[in-house]
Image (cartoon, rainbow, N blue to C red; front, top):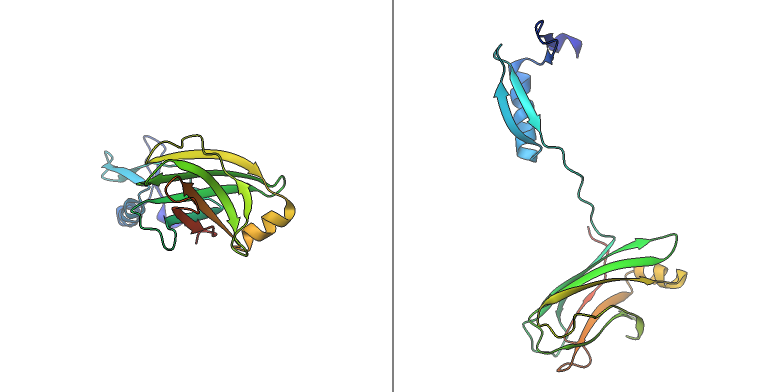
Length: 172
């Protein structure tokens, strides 16, 4: 790689030949990492890189749609991160277009439909909104969550069995 580098004797900076820099700049611009290019006094190309924190995706997600047999335009989403050591599940869910106030939000088991754990539902009187919280799962519940055996269900006054729900999955 050394044979591709040239040094500017006045500044002591090392520059790559313009063609290589242009290719690198094009790649970085396409990937969103380069936010500025400039030329120096010797005709070389200088790059300004915008380095950002990598985006982390949640451990689990669910898309919330109308429960079978319910007529609604409501929808929502759920995302969560799991601390595997403690079993603590930190979650956020949001919704829009609910027909009435929320009466409860739970994680249910797909096998039998029973409630596994209740989720925070402090913001219940809004047709649209979000809630966040943390629950602690047992080792067996963590295993079932990872196996895809749970879903989120948002219950409302008009739809006591649930207005919107969605299977909890690991995002791709």
